[in-house]
Length: 191
Image 1 (tube, rainbow, N blue to C red):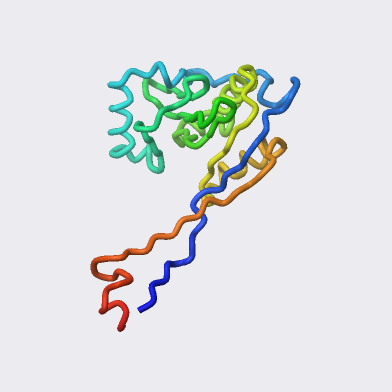
Image 2 (cartoon, one colour):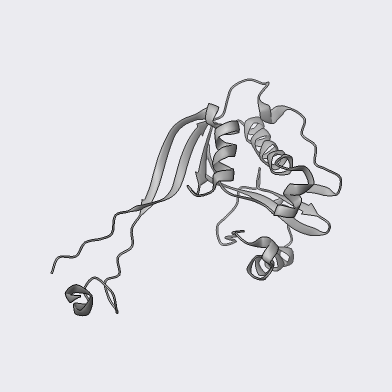
């Protein structure tokens, strides 16, 4: 019996971007959050608040689609969060993969906060992170985006694409080798 893996599926798009030289870029202009929304450094978030947020992401329907991975270390320079009405309602998580490279891989803002000022709330978070990267002289960044996330793809196209030097597809395929329905299951092979 010959085993064949299914064709790999595109799991993420990886945009490699070079930090622009000089000044006058969109992220350097003044950005203001609407009243009641405040930004904070994710590194300053107390552990108890982080655990409460993890639980909230699992149980509160307002956090549908939010992903947190607290086991991976975050870059303290520009990993940021948003407070609104006493709750954490958005974040941009960045990871440093080399001294000169950052990965932007978890950007999320709760829908009701987006409605406060449309895309400006999320863009203010993004602009601050990029401003900090630029000021620190970190030349490279990667933007890891789910190909089904039309909103984030639009943000990358409008605000990041001018700095992109390469786009890669991250693909994966999964093939079960044991158990019912697996590739080596005689019932699956005969039917």
